[in-house]
Length: 162
Image (tube, rainbow, N blue to C red; front, top):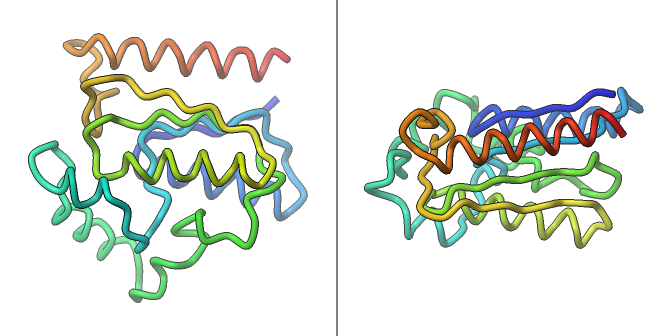
């Protein structure tokens, strides 16, 4: 079996790879594991405003990242940048999506899971209380980081073993 996984921008890349695998007829993916992914490009969601400052990933920093990542503002609406804008979310590999609680990207993760389910797909959502963007990197001092890594590992193992 094969799976894709990533956190933050890596979560975006993993989700895009799941779309490409579906659209190009393979390889078949057992799972996409997305930790606090960026999935919406230019679409506004409440968490971008609510958590715009003070939680490591700021609105200003997100704007800077977007400027480095795209050639034109229209690219922010392209499915290869923002998978939520794909024609369909049906037929994607099952997803395990793990947002951070206090993160501008929180609502992107939860909204994407809901959209996948609405399209008939499987999307498991697990949010660890008190977490901020990038918390996996803080696993040595943040128990939620260790728990999220173990959780993802269990889901990957189950998907690849089955």
